Amino acid sequence: MPSGEYNSGAEQSKVKTFADDMLTTLNHGALCLMISIGHRCELFDIMSKMAPATSVEIASRAGLNERYVREWLGAMVMGRIVEVTPGALHFFLPPEHAAFLIRDASIDNLAVFSQYIPMLGAVEDDMVECFRKGGGVPYSKYTRFHEIMAEESGQSVLLLLETHILPLIPGLRERLSNGIRMLDVGCGQGHIINKLASLYPRSLFFGIDFSNETLAHAREEASLLGCKNIQFIASDLSDFDTTVENDSYDFITSFDAIHDQSKPLNVLKGINRALKADGVYLMQENSGTSDLEKDVEHHIGTLLYTISCLHCLPVSLAQDGEGLGAMWGEENIRQYLHKAGFLTVIKHHLAHDIQNYWYVVSK
Image (cartoon, rainbow, N blue to C red; front, side, top):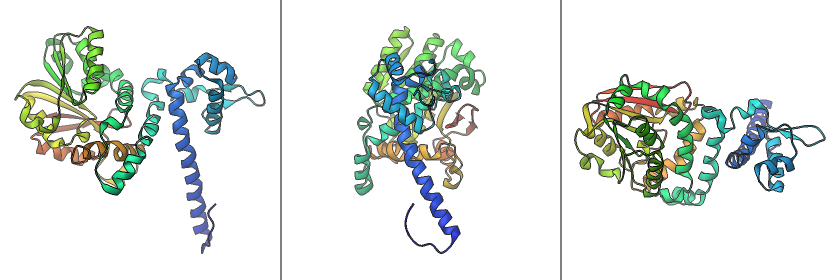
């Protein structure tokens, strides 16, 4: 409890409340690191299938070092994630907790998001320099970013692609079945477009991204799936508005990709140019509002602004970009789309998705 004199009991109460909140924040910050490790080591998945067990039994089942597992379990008990039987030190993961921590939970698995905390913490020194001198941090500094994004997208987009996302555009699945040309802008490791290519062999698919490393993963997966109808292109999108061919695609997508670009308006203008007159652009972006006071009500607003500050902003500024940030919000998104030449913008909010809005856009 901080020391000091306060004029009233009300002021003392506010100070105590804030001090208690800060201690909770410190504990929860530490807990995120441990949840990330538990997720990556598959400890939650393993414990969800075990009866109450000792640290030795859990470590043995997981193939991990017992001493580290024991200490990890201590943090999990302190954080009220794992429970322990009195006296015997048998640990178990309650099913109501497992429902939000294991891979089988699919779209409800929140442990995936905890990985952003250690990944972003790794660039803290670089970010302090950015705060002092400006500039940015290149993508190459974020060693696990594409891996985490692919895992997050895998449960929030990939699993629901056919059932929830494609139906946002009436008749799209039929058009894909008959054969159209599709482009995914900022495709990353290509999981989404590879799945579409395997589902719709009559259509032609193109993925574009600046990272040769991520595209290598995309090409390898396409080969394993036996997809002959897909091509991946390595390209900087900063001049996309002048380099892309006119009226080339029936369907274009971008999944959480536009705000990171150095010249987002050029990318959107390029998408408009590349889209056929009757084509559709599907844009996924974080569900900000462009109004900080309204964003306070966002379920994961603090997390999204942190990711924006420590990743989205610096990677854009590292390219001398605009630095829109992940929470540029609906109002700004609509303005950029209209500046790019789009006339119709329809926003959708999927019930399962606490993070994103989906914009169906046409000329």
